[in-house]
Length: 97
Image 1: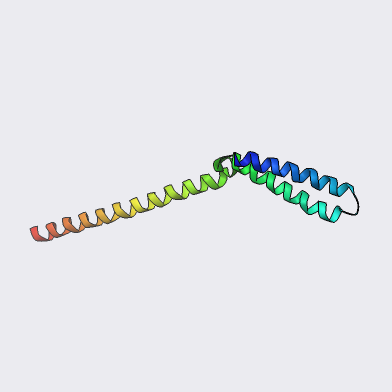
Image 2: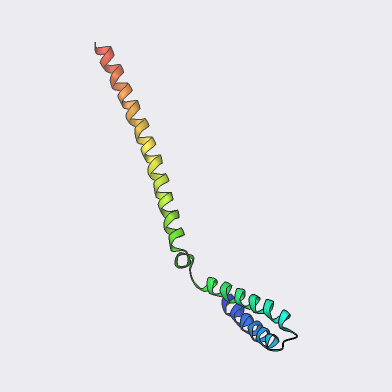
């Protein structure tokens, strides 16, 4: 609903800006209004489209970095466990000797 309201407002501002630009004297007022209308249209479009579609590379990068950090944490934990087990085995070997 917000996107439709923004696009409607952008359309009205675009029409007003175009009319102001047609009159040479009011062109300095019409040009900024046209820029504002374009910004409203862009915002309305961003509200309609999901973020993953708008920025697919950013979404994939975030997912990959999350997975890599999880993988790094898992690797650290498993190396700590392996080190502890190796130390225990070394102590048992020393005691048996």
